[in-house]
Amino acid sequence: MKSKEMSTSTANLEASISEAVGGQDVTSRADLDGSSVDGRTPRFYVEPNRPEEMAEILHICDSAGAAVIPRGSGSRLALGNLPAAYDVSISTARLGDVLEYEPGDMTVSVQAGIKLAGLQRVLAGENQFLALDPPFGDRATIGGILAANSSGPLRAGYGTARDQLIGIRVAHPDGVVTKAGGMVVKNVTGYDLNKLYMGSLGTLGVIVEANFKLYPLPAVEKSVLAVFGEAEAAARAVDRLVDSVLMPNSVELLDSNALSRVTEGGAPAGGRALLVKFGGGIEAVDRQVSDLQTICADAAGVDALGGLEQDSLWQSVRELQAGSADRGETLCKISVLSSQVPDVFERARMASESAGLTVALWARAVSGICYASIEGEESDASAIRSVVTSLRAGLGSASATVVESCPPFVKEDFDVWGDSVDPVALDIMKSIKTKFDPGGTLSPGRFVGGI
Image (cartoon, rainbow, N blue to C red; front, side, top):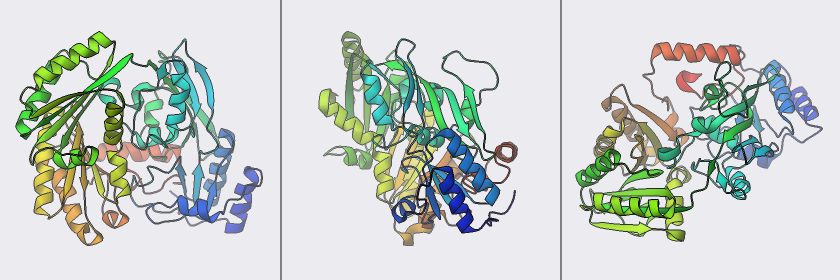
């Protein structure tokens, strides 16, 4: 992999990039500052107008030895290690169109820069939706969601973005735009490269277009909020829910600190709250709500929610991750077996208390995806890292703890992806990176193992 010392003069690189996008200014101070990653600001910022321009600019940067970090809305730029180099911020802001929408086939093709919220409004006109609800949903772009593999509470019922994606187009540093999949749900020809780009953080190419399968909007949605005085009672309710025939589309477990962030009151100290949503026909939903209330009979309080009250609460839950990032807290995503969720909560609480820090905890309870948001100042950097290290060491090889966002001072000499990646898997990832980006142009150093 070549050095990122630029082999072309700054003036020549600026002129080449600007020419590729029809004379667009690529040195706007506001755009540069807005593209800062962990305190590092690029030299140039550019918004290609077409996928082919995106590929051309990547090739220009690759030839010049200039490091590129792709971006959508910029909502997830905190994800990843400190960049090894950063010269050019390349944005999908001008790639925001719906390319093809077939309501009868329940598929849609869009450019990567379109915002999820805007796309959902278009689909709602045909009583359909894309079953994704990641954090930063009001400004997250489709390309950013895929690159960061973002998901929200709906993953309990619909899966993640990789389960909705059926086709993709990607711009590469060699100047080529490639595609995989198509507009047909049962497209199984060739390698399934769609999933390769999921969560790759812009290290293999820049996603420029994506095709998805869609779902009909539920006729009605209702939720149940059950607040338990004891963690064990909440865990038993989750177990009974999993063993039942109920079919929720969202299941969240929150500790008292997380609940206090999304409601006016919190759970009792040491308690938990279970928030579950059902969607479908009104009779089926009402029956499931009633059955879940019975399952949660041990709760201190059980409320059925609907309408604006329900929507507001779920919006707050989805944005817990965004709120943690905005406050400069250290947000960990811990992936475990669903049966280990109570253990994660207890370990995170004990490790944080031992370090003298406050933590808020919530989880996609049936998916085993847990979040720990750790409060701390720069003087607490070592204590914060010790909590993360403790979590990684105590949950077993089947778990994974990633620091999704944190202040730069936490990242110093610290791999946010973890330092115990299977060496065979890491070698495979490095080999793929070398094939797709031999010059190390894209997001250098930000991915697993410094890729």
